[in-house]
Length: 61
Image (cartoon, rainbow, N blue to C red):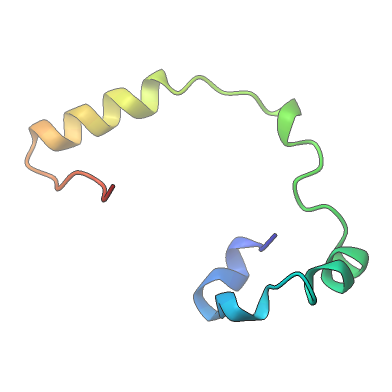
């Protein structure tokens, strides 16, 4: 559970079974309410197809 601001500086090794309970207690559930924001993936898939047709590299597997 990271915020986008934390991603560039994070070390995945810092997020373990031993460290996450304290982080969760401090920060709360950063994903609470995620199911309330439902979006259709069709536009994103269309953009990806458009970009690939324009020569963009496909995302890694």
